[in-house]
Length: 333
Ligand code: NAI
Image 1: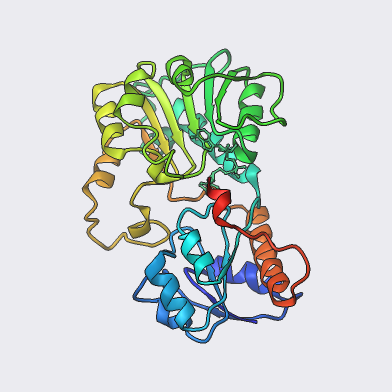
Image 2: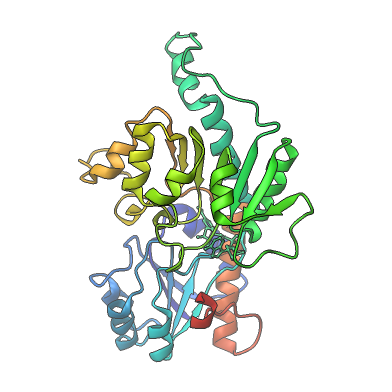
């Protein structure tokens, strides 16, 4: 099958080429992010393969369908960037990679917790400059602290397990509590989680209900000096409210792997450019904020699974048999 693969980097090509040896699809690699402007590049391709910051709104889907595209193969678990009802209306099949390595993301969230707590990102630079002062590097024992997990799906539960291993008490909030949650996971209301947690980590998808779930009202309920971690989706957090929380000291440490307006920034080398996003630049000025550019998924295991499942989805669609991880509008509810 002919596949136009958007938003590709050298590492995507390496893993997709390796996985494609079993499939033999014709893959056209495009650097460009999928937008209204770039959608015409997919004309004549039955399948479009897209990543987290590719835009698949009604306008883009119409352009793709006009060019003959019948399938969207997402290289991600999240599908908030696709207008699913519109895709269905246009008769397009949307598939995703439901789980490629929940461990990768959960472990990265833990890396943010540890690094923010002991400020290893600051210590690294200090020591290289011959500054062995410990002022400003004071952390706290994780043992005995309360961790709030928002969203106990595949990633949230692994994060909960790891934090329990440190000796933390684990609270969780989820409208659909998991049957797989271990006995130590205490389900509480979202408000109670906000009020009782020393560390809050977000592992819910972006939906209309979770858009700006962490807003000024939610932040006001948190403990003073709380640590907030987001490896879910940027829009789950109202960035302006979080900046106010950092300025007042309500939020003591902030770790982000995702950002509301990351489409314009992440996955690119902008070191020679002036970054016009003032909110993002304000975030980078806080000493107690650690940001990574949507890299939580970025492990060898995850990239292997993403490539294999994506191509399996495309082959299943082509042949009409095999496992196709289809996403349909009701899943969004
Ligand atoms: P999942 O579908 O297994 O679990 C999501 C959980 O969130 C479900 O249990 C669901 O009931 C819960 N949830 C939904 N609405 C909620 C709400 N209002 N409050 C609390 N919980 C709510 O998804 P998985 O695999 O655990 O991934 C979670 C999210 O992580 C994805 O949706 C995606 O946005 C993000 N992600 C980020 C990556 C990164 O590289 N930073 C990579 C992969 C996923």
